[in-house]
Length: 255
Length: 319
Ligand SMILES: Cc1cc2nc3c(=O)[nH]c(=O)nc-3n(C[C@H](O)[C@H](O)[C@H](O)COP(=O)(O)OP(=O)(O)OC[C@H]3O[C@@H](n4cnc5c(N)ncnc54)[C@H](O)[C@@H]3O)c2cc1C
Ligand SMILES: Nc1ncnc2c1ncn2[C@@H]1O[C@H](COP(=O)(O)O)[C@@H](O)[C@H]1O
Image 1 (cartoon, each protein chain N blue to C red):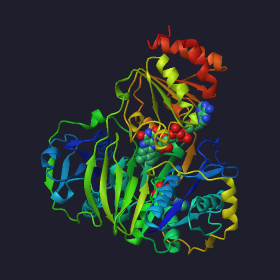
Image 2 (image 1 turned 90 degrees about the vertical axis):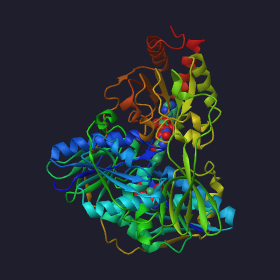
Image 3 (image 1 turned 120 degrees about the vertical axis):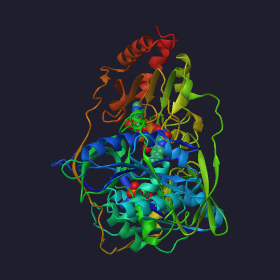
Image 4 (image 1 turned 120 degrees about the horizontal axis):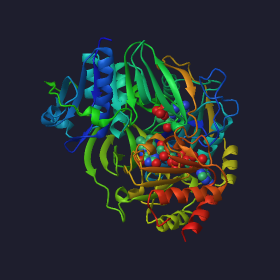
């Protein structure tokens, strides 16, 4: 099975975020990017399917941040056969424009895996747009796949641990919530090897032709703990206060 | 505003989900504000009785098709898309749930309407605008919409489910399935989760670990604290995806909804998908090194600091 996987660099959720001067976006000058957490699972599921079917994996990413290249080298080090950086200097684009770029750059694949969602996009629908443009079926919130002859059996998660299985005909596009096993790690030395491997290529994209029809007019970072009592002091002070709170709630013999 | 407000309902095993009632409550507010009607779309097989049980909408549009008995990510979305094309609602409300995530963008694309995701409120006055959460709840964004129609994927908690139950008797309109039955996608079976060793929904004290716990080995420290408090350990999704704790310990959208007396969150960021499973807890205490962590927005008490410094202090005091 020949699999394409779309990887997106998103602002590191653990870093302190700051807004730009007109408060319409993050201040991106000093922002660190990481691979969108669900895309790490999409890549893992792609690599597992490659192993199941003696197939191949091509990772695609869009954008110019250094982290994007690093992300693609990591994908190669983990087992992707090829990586493609789509476009250069494209800046922030909305979902429709991004999907246009991908569709122009994607090779022929039996299956395209994406993360279930990206944390930094309000009209979150790149994966679905790609599937619509290619005319492939799309299923989201997928937590496992198993290959058949020319179909794929997939597990979709509902809620409270309830799952449903579907047979999906190929080619298809899936939004992966979690791979069937935890994403693999890779040694830094392998990533360095990947940088030398020549498996990363760049492709120019045609300019996008559509737009999402929504505009972000203002962003803000909600005030820390608005409505919460924030405990001051070191861990000893915090422990004392929390013990008091537990006692007040009448739990744990913490009286 | 000319078109109606359309709620895309969600149901499983003969009952509508809470998300559906929340959307009906939100839809009712919007319909009142804009002087339009509230409609609900119910797609499935043998769903007419169920459709008749909805009290909030003015009209229920029923697509009854044996081929759509179980949720089909393509079939259900195609059916609703055809409905949207035909009736031209002004606002389409889709729950931000597993089935809604298949439907919302599918409908938006097929109907050529803008999609607004992670939406927490909608303002129909003075053009259409909305407030959304971005970056897993760390940032709030105001958005305006070109034109006067859009599809919204609405976060849990945007309105109260109780207000969406209603006791009216809406018109029921049967509509032949205008679309196919899921081209390329065939439902095969539903699987219930296996029972766990504990039922976190009935525990009074939950010590909840998130990715801040860093490794499987460190969970033992949290277990020790939970035991000292007469409670159990629960977790956010990544901990379960890593295989460090079983699925039955997961709190949130795709896990369980809990409302214990005490919810002590250690290294949990408070993404909207986590918060929807725990916001009803009586006392929420959050510990996180990041002062911007959205968990502090839902907590009653918070401490900005390292969970590994705090854990031994707490355990000591309880021994
Ligand atoms: C459809 C769907 C369903 C989902 N369902 C669920 C669900 O049911 N449950 C769920 O939890 N998630 C769910 N998610 C995932 C959710 O979006 C988040 O990814 C997840 O909740 C993040 O978990 P976390 O808070 O543990 O990790 P992170 O977001 O990585 O947060 C870790 C936190 O730990 C803090 N930290 C790090 N080190 C320390 C330290 N030493 N001391 C104190 N704090 C520290 C960091 O500051 C950070 O805030 C779902 C997502 C989707 C798309
Ligand atoms: N700019 C991008 N670069 C690479 N992949 C992307 C991009 N945008 C979206 N994707 C993929 O589509 C998934 C879902 O994103 P979205 O549909 O935009 O929420 C992501 O998890 C990625 O797999």
